[in-house]
Length: 229
Image (cartoon, rainbow, N blue to C red; front, side):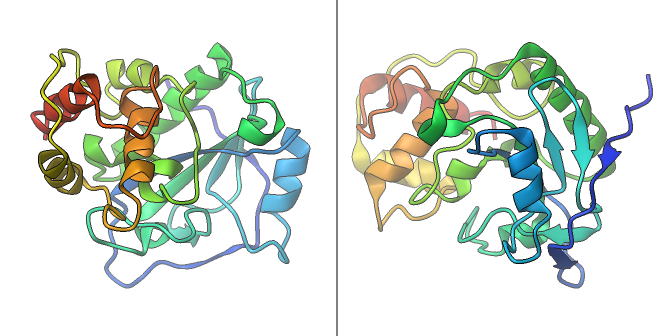
């Protein structure tokens, strides 16, 4: 089945990707605003200087804001696997959701189905490894919480989009080992705020306990995840 074409809603907020930069990150966000129209207005406002390549509403409607060949401005200060220009190597998708500030809620099945369809098409066009299908909080753990602990990462991974550790026995917590494994997987900012990075990891891979504390279950998830890369 052919990919449904997104509805055009061009944003002026983009520029050229760095010469020779391959798109190898797929970055997912929530809008954190009270409506889809408010989010679209901001993402298309030249004074806001923010954008994404796509936005998906809660009813499944998909809007195309920036061409994939251009650098959209969605990640801000961010880092993954030691590289700071996440915008230059990523495609950003915004999901309409009020976020933690305005009444965070689960992402509707129709929205997640449209996201999965769009992600599969993007992954077919670009060499994005599973470990690079990320949330904004993964690459900006000191600033961001999205798409958050209610996002169904496991469901996406079951469709071949991203990673999810199916078997993750608990392990004895060891902070030095956890730091090494988080860095090996790709997380930055470990020396600036280790608990914030742990919370980002938990939001993605252990959403039932977003505490910022290294416990046996978190250590087990991290160990199991690193065995997949």
